[in-house]
View 1: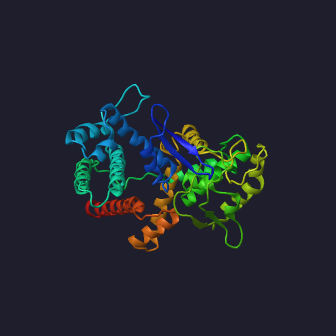
View 2: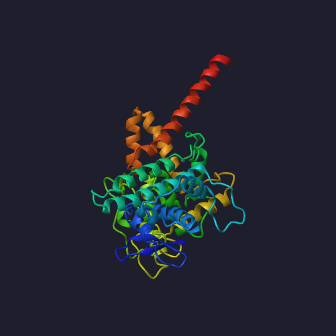
View 3: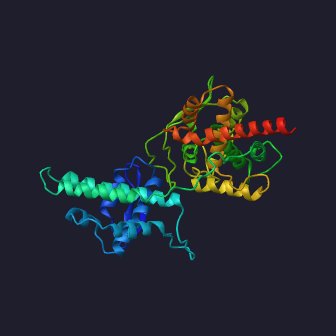
Length: 391
C-alpha cells in the first residue's frame, strides 16, 4: 500500500490510499474527504495510519466492512490481541533494524485515527438502516463495546518537562542574527542576494513567529510600507501556478503584524527592491512570492530545512543542534510570553494574546510557554531563597 497526493483542477492537493494493485481503497479515501479541512500532511499521516489497519485485516483475512454490515462484528482477541498489537509495532520497511515497539505518542496517534475510522464505518452503516430494523440496537451496542475496548488501550505517556526550553537562548539568538546579517563581517551565503534572502527569512520567523508554510506563502503584496508598515499573513485559495511539492499552506488564522522596527523595515525594503529582483532574473518565470530560491523560483520547504542544516553544520558550537524553523517559533513565543508577563497581563489574557500573534485557533497550544515562564520564575525565586538562607 502507498499514499499518493493528487493535484485537483481546483488547486487542492488531496492524498489517496492505494492498495497493492494500485487501486484506490474507497472507504479510507472517503474518510479523508470528510477531513479535508485539515492540512495535507495531517491527511497523509492519517492514511498511513489506516494502511496499518488494512495490512492487519488483509493478513488475517478480515473484511472490516463485511464484519460490520453482517452483524458478526469482532472478537475481543481480534481487536485487543491482533489489531492493537499490530499498531504497537514498528511498521517501517526501509530500516534493517526494527524497534520492538513505537513511542506512546505514535501509538496514540495511530489508535486515534483507527478509532475515528471505525466510528466512521459504523456511522455510515447505521445511517443507512431504517429505524425499524431489528438489528439497529444490536449493531449500535457493538460499536459502543468496540470503542470501549479501543479507547482503553491508549497509553499514558511518561511525564515530560513541559517547561523545557525548545527555543534559542539570548546569546544564540544574537549570534544567529549577527552571522546572517549581510552588513556584518560574517559571510554565510553564496552572494549578497542569497545572504539577504536568508537574513530576511530568519528575521521574519524570529520576530513574528511565522510557520514555514506561512513564510513561504508570503507574497510581495503582503508587505506594506507606509505610516503603519505591516506584514499580512493571508489565507488564500490554492495557487494553481505554484509547482512546489509539497505546496506551502497557511493552515491557521491569518493576521496583520506591524513592522515597528525601522532597521527591519529598511532591510525588507532593500530586499524587495534590489536583491529579490536579482534572484528573480535568474528564472524565466516571474513570481509574486516574497522568498525566492537561488534560481529565482519560489523557495521550497526542503530548501528552508537545508538552510538550517547548513547553519548547524557551519556553527556547531555557537548554534544549538536543534536549530530549525520550529525552534525560531518557540523562541518568539517564549520571548513574547515573557514580555506579556512583564507588562502585567494575567494568564488568560496572555494565552489569548499569544494565540492572536501566533495565528492559533486554540488556546491550548500556549500552555507550554506559560509553563516555561512559570518554571523560570519559580527557579529564580528558589535561587533568591537559597541566597537569603544560605548566604
